[in-house]
Amino acid sequence: MQPTEEFAEIIHSRLLKRDDPTASAELIGAYLELLFNRLERNPQFSQLSDKTLVSDAVTDTLLDYAENPERFDPKKSSLITYLTMAAKGDLLNLINKEQRRLQREKELVAQFKANRNTLQEDSTQDALQENHTYQKLMEQVLSEFPDALDRQLLPLILDRERKTAAYVEILGIQHKSQMEQTRIVKQHKDRINKRLQRLGVKINERTTQQRHDETSG
Amino acid sequence: MNELHNSVMMKRAAERATKRTFFVAAALSAYQELEKISDIELAAYLRCSEEQLPKLALCRKPERASTTFQADVRKIAAYAGVDQRQFAKLLRVVESLPIFQTALSASGSGLLVAACDRHEPKSDGDDHDDHDVGVSKQKEPDEV
Image 1 (cartoon, rainbow over the protein chains, first blue to last red):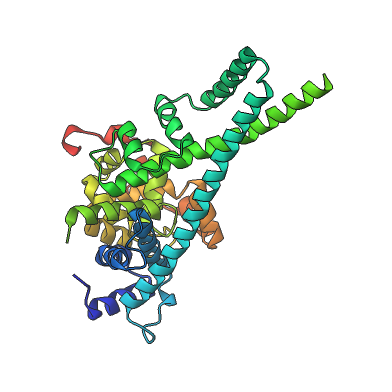
Image 2 (image 1 turned 45 degrees about the vertical axis):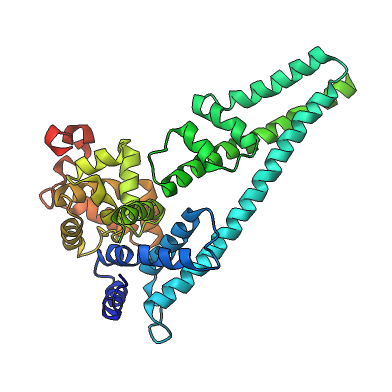
């Protein structure tokens, strides 16, 4: 149920006075789901598969407003209109950020695969050497991922598996809500990708050094 | 309203608020980090249920330097249904942590807080045992 205009006026006034420590929690409790539903049903975002982005945008909007209520001018619009507009803006920003992140992830995996191929091509003349080099590369990767769960997730990430369900099964979080599953999977993917990114730099450095040693030796 | 959905969203909002020192969430998170405790253990420490934590987390964090500190703590505790004394203890512990000192210094109130800490009589509040209130001591079967 949408909070009344009277509630909006009172909560805004309480936030402005900064003397009421529970006003922010009451605000968020009253508007969180309402704003989420508004954005989720908006044709502009209804096709969005990752609903956590909607939830995050709505949350950030409410947290921002609770911290800086003076940004809202009641003379210009109603509180719900202001919050909806702000949440839309936040959501568009998050979508752009997520797209850039996915692009970086794509480039990272491509770089990783290119490194692997380079190492393999460098040693095609000798099958044993090739096998050895590949094993060495995988050892480097696995040494960064001692955790058994990470080692199960790693192939999915390297194969750019997009389906959350595949990760959910490995993580054993089928009992959690879809939103929670997406959030947990994203956390794991981000963490592993960061390590891969660091490893990509290390491998690049090592392969460059290796080539240098080969030519100078 | 879908209560389950709303409670998941409130929990998520509380998680996102941990990065903002304006909210109680940041203090709760810092305390959990310090004591290495889970949400369930934190709830036991505050003598409430785990479901009540997001409500508490999304309140504005009372400032110790403020004259309304005690009143704010009382109000929040009553609103979120947590133990007032335990909540006050938690706030005192976390405000001595560097992350909050930095935040307070940035807002210009850090020195004031430090001064309050030095001059605050031990009988004012319940912090005589602030630094030996390890959560493990608080965990009794009827509290969990």
